[in-house]
Image: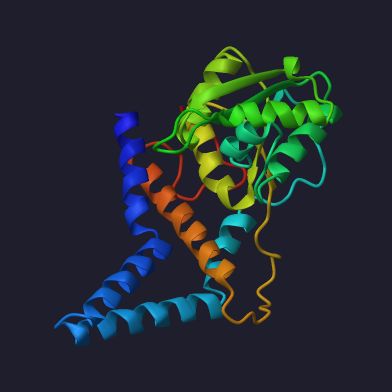
Length: 272
């Protein structure tokens, strides 16, 4: 059932993500312009251009991402004692790292750098890297291999770390990580992931049985509603897609019983 959920979620998002929908409409409209359905083709092209213009000009991405990133505030004071630290993968470029022989990271690199920093701060803490392969195709390249290369460069001994290389989504990150740490383990764990991804992650980890302390990183918004105009900024559109994906993920995880709440909040309880 978990495999079916994973495949279905990947297929649906591949077809329904806003950037792909606009591209499909634009392509269809362009083709129709050269047929007898010219009027429909012009409408599709115009609609695609209008949608693109709106989402690259207006701060709609901020309205989606800011509530996600503000749900769990940044951890400004570290606890005195913890049982361990777990970081979710997502900062790696496994294919490039493998072919080039050196770690290559995307814009979420803070996940791994924060993990290294906290591992040094808590030299006795247990460490878990929750990785795997999230791609529907091309399962040959694992994110944990990239992480190992980076940790070696930054001087973190990988022998301290337990690696999960089989998780395909956030739910499996929590379940596989729980099995690695052992159900008999008690105490708080620091959970590291991107700020916009933290609400869904906390809900899943609580549902699985973890007591987690959120440590959000990789912020995409400033935390303010102030908007600086950027004409035709494609990144706004990509951020909108990212925010929409996360909100839909929260709904899907709640409907399928994979999270403790629709929109988890600080101070919530664990639900097993």
